Amino acid sequence: APDISVENVQQHLKELDAVAQANGGNRAHGEPGYKASIDYVKGKLDEAGFETSVQEFDKGGATGYNLIAEWPGGSADDVLMAGAHLDSVSDGAGINDNASGSAGLLEVALAVAAGDLQPSKHLRFAWWGAEELGLVGSNHYVSSLDDAELGKIGGYLNFDMIGSPNPGYFVYNEDPELEKVFTDWFAQKQIETEPATETDGRSDHASFQDAGVKVGGLFTGAGETMTEEQAGKWNGTAGEAFDKCYHSACDGTDNINADALDANSDAIAHAIWELSS
Ligand code: PHE
Ligand code: CA
Ligand code: ZN
Ligand code: ZN
Ligand code: ZN
Image 1 (cartoon, rainbow, N blue to C red):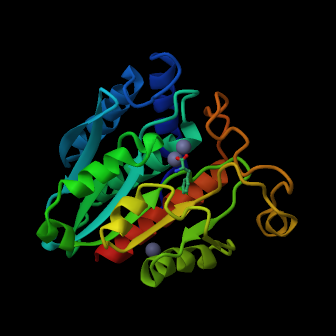
Image 2 (cartoon, rainbow, N blue to C red; image 1 turned 30 degrees about the horizontal axis):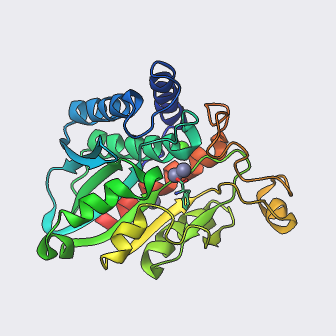
Image 3 (cartoon, rainbow, N blue to C red; image 1 turned 90 degrees about the vertical axis):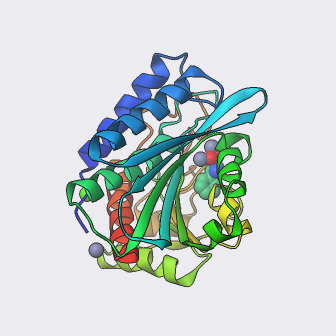
């Protein structure tokens, strides 16, 4: 898999932050900053040769949007999916939560195109709306599939918060094979990981898991406090939150640890390459 440029990922964060600043300071469901975020990501993917579609849904009287991007080719009966929620809370720009996962995944998708990857599986990327209102977009998408379409999805990888300022390195442990592709990569980089337990049911992977799809993913921590033991292995700050700006106005471009963003983006690429081959 290619080494993903963290500078490129950070550039997407800057652009998504600018989108928030131009639209009242957030990228929340029902607000103009959300649709502008969709337009930004879609524009990059269209330019790179993805087949994109925007799925609309209603939540609370406002239109929500999921962005789906298909990489042409691969076995239509064997689909690998990866997704990230693109909406923020209304209190801020949502740069760690979850421009980080959205941008890391976007840069990996652009690397798939740049490398003209021809995997044996079909690759489908998704950016979800209204996660912050209860996994609404991803639930809508899963509900829109019939059993046959659902059965073709061999795995779903979720990326929600991958650049926390006081980062932990958490790997979803719902499925052993999907967990191992990530833990192998971190082990090779000599970065210790822990199974993600705080994530259970709390992000878009739950929509897929509830429908019987195997799930995996990465997480660098939200409002929980880092322990002494964790601070030792990750060279972090014990007694402080992984993300002290979680769901707050200060979740801007300064609220990102670049090393965590880099490592997790590279790990996403590794997993996509390994699992789709
Ligand atoms: N989904 C939560 C949020 O967006 C945080 C979270 C991220 C929880 C990843 C679990 C896993 O606020
Ligand atoms: Ca990198
Ligand atoms: Zn959130
Ligand atoms: Zn989130
Ligand atoms: Zn690799």
